[in-house]
Amino acid sequence: MERKLVPAVSPQAAIVGYSRAVRDGRIVHVAGTAPIGIDSLDPYEQAKRCLQVITEALAEVGAGPEHVVRTRVYLVNADDWEAVGRAHGEVFGDVRPASAVIVIAGLLDERWKVEIEAEALLPE
Image 1: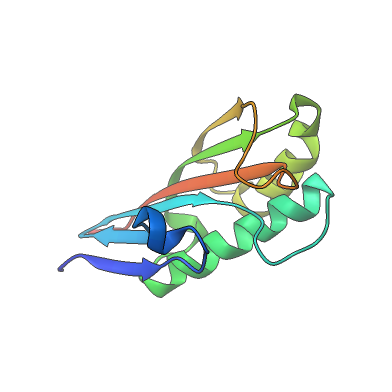
Image 2 (image 1 turned 90 degrees about the vertical axis):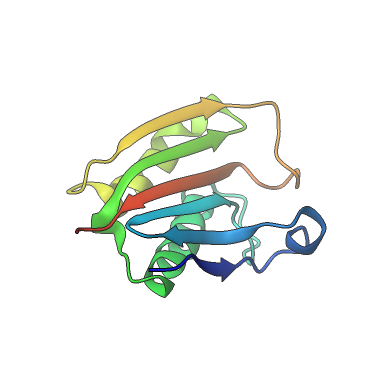
């Protein structure tokens, strides 16, 4: 299979030059995904939106949450880990990918509380 790109729907995509997801063979990388398109400041709702965008990007290249082997969750506030973790568990609770939760100083938009990356491995 040749390399397949899923375009990012983001004002930063054209400037930075990135895709929402890239599939190369069996491997799918999903870029850091912020809660674009919602106004909620609730970390749980923001995480759900990030995971929705990730799931949609995976589907565009023939993958699903069940193929995800690693996630990285970036939080602005460590106290949000439980709410964000609950949303993550709703999608990946049975999949149990390797995961990291990293607390950072901030994200591009000060309203964003979470950003999530994912990597998937499709069956042979």
